[in-house]
Image (spheres, rainbow, N blue to C red):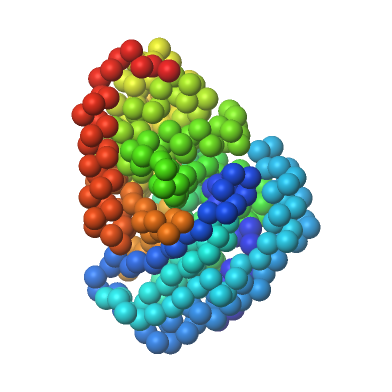
Length: 407
């Protein structure tokens, strides 16, 4: 197989926005990341595993070019000091550990500085996906079905059956292949739609290549590591610590807050007037999107902030039909945007992989995500997860409903 990752820009944009803040504020933090395949019927063969290792070695041989660094520096929130760091940075194959002791036959862990290990997540998942689909199936047949489904989607966008407003492509981690993702981005960019606007892609390499906006701000890892990696912190206040550090780095720039790292209800205890004003919007990634959006609008109104000035960004398991329903439901009540991944980048005749690579430890301490729905976390220590849940419950029981604390 040809190299799958050919540029260090080929990752999601939020890896750079988080990476800069990590570099300036948490450069000594160390993390462990663990791979998991949630598909019950998937098995990685020895041949696949060897190719995955080879592809990651090739990825670890890449360096940023001066042209790529100049592109990053032109983003108004990227600072020269971070670009200087990236000029020296390279992935380390020594940070990776591979094994076969799992139901799917593949384990991957990365250990090292957060600066390093954070950058490995997206390329690793893209490599695993492409190797699997090229070796487990007739890839040409998959691409044929992918093109047919993509063209059908575009036609429905053109005739107005789908009405999304602003939407972006978020599919690199679970894409069928680099070829498929690029075809989708190019096709969506070249067409015009009456009720939809293709804004950009999370893949920075493709954004640069096609003159699109690289889209993305923060991920769950930011809230988990900032809020739980310092052993002095009460983890029930993870969102406050994470937003405080983000605002120190970016002020009012680059600000979409992720709400469900330790439940949205707990997030709202910290998302008071200051942060709700500074952040341009919030991102939904679990739970009922309609109930979540209603809750966020109600919260903005309680703070005397006009929700029409804020963006609700939806990114949880979306397709164009579902996004259209969400858009029409919130029309006139708030700005709405969508980040759509697998449905754009890996829609074929066979089911996509449901694979993740999550932070499981920070500074020698377990970390966990307590999402708005069960099954999206990946903590290795049930005792820590239970402790975090108790911290959240205690805080919610003692703080919720204190309407005097709007600041």
